[in-house]
Length: 119
Image 1 (cartoon, rainbow, N blue to C red):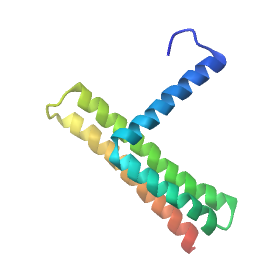
Image 2 (image 1 turned 90 degrees about the horizontal axis):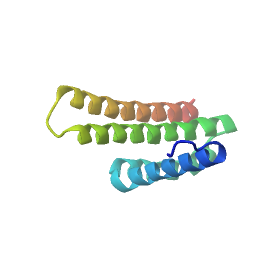
Image 3 (image 1 turned 90 degrees about the vertical axis):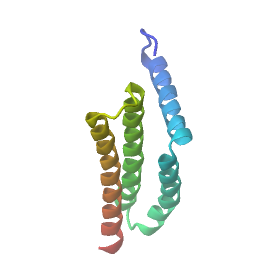
């Protein structure tokens, strides 16, 4: 973003960069595509199976958290790979932690769905 942008111009520019990030995640990350497709299939199911707006919101939000974690994980992997291809303990740890974030987001989504659907 160019220095000096303010107000609506800054918001529009930021939205453009965000769109580029979503596009890059879709184009380059198979896991993101799979989670997005699953999420798109589950959103109508969440609306149909839930008994309130709050339940629907929680179920759908848990799916968004998975996508957010996947994008952050992909960003971590990209920057680690950009820095260097040689094996380094900290690089491996960063990638493992990003992957763990995605796993925890998936467990969170499963727990939310199970509690809402079966309690």
